[in-house]
Length: 337
Image 1 (cartoon, rainbow, N blue to C red):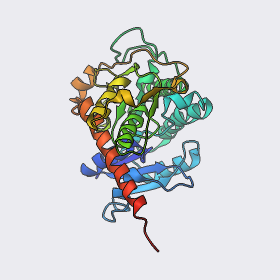
Image 2 (image 1 turned 90 degrees about the vertical axis):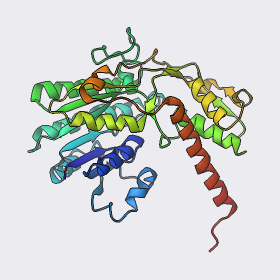
Image 3 (image 1 turned 60 degrees about the horizontal axis):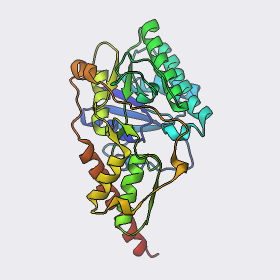
Image 4 (image 1 turned 135 degrees about the vertical axis):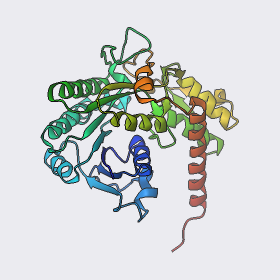
């Protein structure tokens, strides 16, 4: 039974990857930050299952800046595969907290690479890089050879981490892979990301819980895929004997405006009646059009996306409807002591 270790296991990608690995017969260990909150909602169905948790799924407290604890944990677990997904991942927020973004995202990756140099076993290592490393590219679509030109603190931190993965792979013979992930969403996406913000607002307005949605630039374009497809690409990359870098993308761009129109159409509302422009949500600098050429991943891994953009946004909107409806019913019928 193979053993996997996931940093950022409670996040969107970490939770889907956990489900995928468990389905494939893995024992899965994951690191979580020690905080005052015990919210692990994305893993709740696994965490509360006694046949899975503490049997094939184990969670451990570990921060990316606690090298001693990380080293001890990885020596104890002795994983066959390590998936490094943790770190501050919000591009807009990185302008507000650049130092902590770089410490988590850049230095956190370097710390793990240094630990891996000393492990007796040589696990396969996956680093979740980002299309934000390209920032302001001169060519479209981008591939694995496109120069890094980040335009945000988050992009800079990811560019550093991706370069270090390449250095450790070439210099120390480590099986270290960069998955250069373009934007990917799902019903488990965090509320502070624009896709989830729009889908939740459409649902809330439909249910009479919200009246308006304030937005920044809705003309911004991204290459958006589905997180469930992307974690499958992660796993496929770890099964190869040779480590490499892979663009994980759909090759198709959509505007934020497309999210708005699909989500509001799904709940039978005219978006024009509810959207207001707000300059507070404009970013200081925004990348030019980022669209990925995933032909290398398609050829080497046999991977391709399976879930369409429209289906993804509709699923996210329906999930928000279900969640908000459930909360509304619970508030109307509070549990009595």
